[in-house]
Image (cartoon, rainbow, N blue to C red; front, side, top):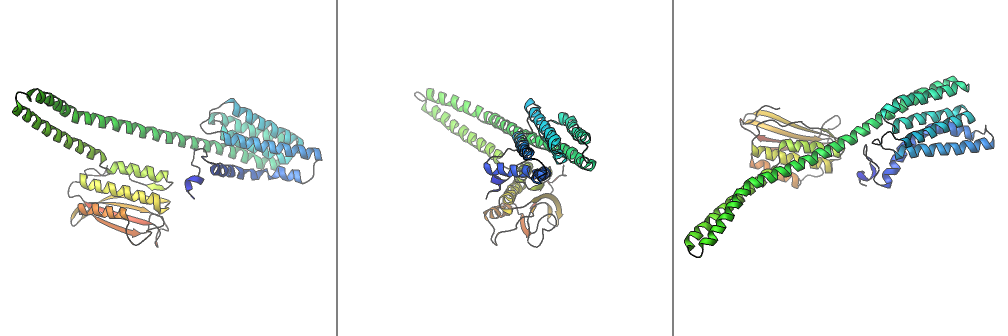
Length: 396
């Protein structure tokens, strides 16, 4: 079964029935504290009419609570509907407590949790203590046992304010996800504009010259065919040079860079739910060819971690080293996943090895990854090194 079908990401609404049931299960776990009212109803201490009223009231309270908590999202504002629902829950909690007694004071804990889960912090900050004060006031007024009242005050305050923290966390996660998507879109737009500008600069002059010489050759062709042939030859030279320029530009756009691949690695690992330890920046002054080899290798290694390792943690390190043969830059990608699946290297490792051979680099694969318990075959570490000579500067 695909994990994406069952897991519900923070701040993301359920995308299918299975995820809805999982979310309902997590919310429903906390209904275990309703055991006190349920026990009160089943003990037989009330009249049949009171028992029927309590059962109906409890089912109504639980249904309204679940509907409120499951229908609201952290991005919803402070609207009147949420206040109306919470007022209804509070009134029902007061009515059931006054009618049926001490065990029903626990309903105020759920009212406080509803406030924290659905209302903004500025509103919940005063409403949660108000709900708790109502619990205490009602309990003391009705002469309920004080130890029970005291035992419920802390869950009401802790549950309510904990839910405000969870709400703020989810809200921040949603905003960060939206901001990241916006930044990615802006970066893509900027890259398209830059490509358009570069192509205009590269081809504008060449195409104008080709057009001009084509028109000139057309006018010369009837009376001066030799001169027209010279113009056609010039057109061929300009066209070939324009083709070379375009290929160079496209190659530059397609060439991966270490800073770009490091950023991509952080995004890919985070999206896969893998705890990532990735350098923020790459060292300065890496020659183009070794940088391209390391960038391709990093992309392939992170892809393997995401797709095949089942890892919970991945560590990427870039370490300049001085060897007897000169300066090298070492890239290591270590995970705590299942380790290698076979004795023969796959196409990805074969491709990495071929690229490294072109720059006299080395590749070492070992069992074991980052963190405790990664030895004895658990985990996988890929280590590459490429020679740099004296070109490498200091790390940013």
